[in-house]
Image (cartoon, rainbow, N blue to C red; front, side):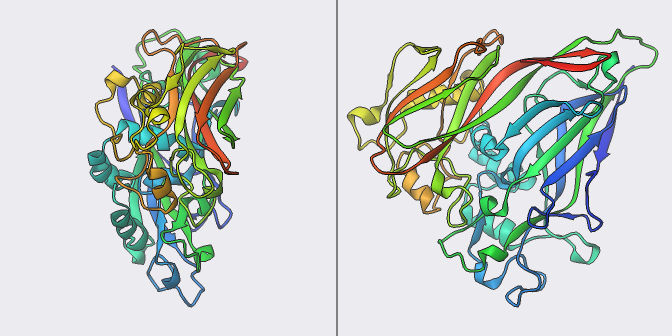
Length: 445
């Protein structure tokens, strides 16, 4: 009879103080889950630790025991993402061969689409506020997370405790992940790397005042990874597996700066299930005066929304899977400030099967076109905009669509009439296969 075992893994590169921050030269957390006969339950993986925002401890403006300098009391972080905002990249490798199995760049932007689409405002103010330090209200999140860290400083624990899952294709699978040697049908252990995001893209000023913002940074302490594994029954001999199928997320980045935005990528993937993405004015990225992780509509230089009037998706230059142009309600009625329902539905369907979404933060406020200008002013309702664009290719069979020899494209007619580069973060959901052999593993995309 198989049994279950709880694992707790500390970072292999942790400092002697146990404190980790991007500012102090520790941008990567590395966790080694060694080769064994166990199988890891991906959905049980959690990143655990304490989080606090700090100023320069040697500065006279710093208050002993406080989290921020006096002159930077207006500091904020994304209330929509909470702790997910600090993860810039998530990389999963084979521990024995160091071959990359899955790499999600701009992970915090990916979670900016995934988290609000699959969780409700009640989740954000309920269990997610305890686990990921989120909150629909930016003032409540600032007071509870940034300005008032909890913990016992006398024993070296300072900050708010967090415990977050790490959604990705490999960890979200229903089949346990084999940790055995490659020749025995396993990955040879796992190497999980978490690349931290820069302080300037996590922390920002609420009112645009950047005084002493350069002295503020976030810090992690007492960090470890916890997970659950299945230990097989030694009396039952199972033949080693030769393949392992899993979903994967691939990330892409581009910018557009015209009324006729044309996006084109060679995906090189054989089983694409869906493509989705979110946007932000490029000037807001890594800018302490603005929330660099906000989602918004395309914007002009004066921070007004550039309405999306028409959009369609291409495969090899042909409209697919929607064989017509999607004309939005803004094309005929520019005063309408609610996102087009079909654009929203296609976007959410690309992230998760639309009929299966039972909890979401998408509503007329978070999908409002007018939120673009509000986001630039750092004033956000119900956690902020959840808008994005996307399309699902296969929500039934799970086999996906072949893009190895056909390019993926998006044509978007929007109201950009000024010099205003907008960034588009694109994520491709596809199915991939791991093939095991004595020589290592091979990833079939």
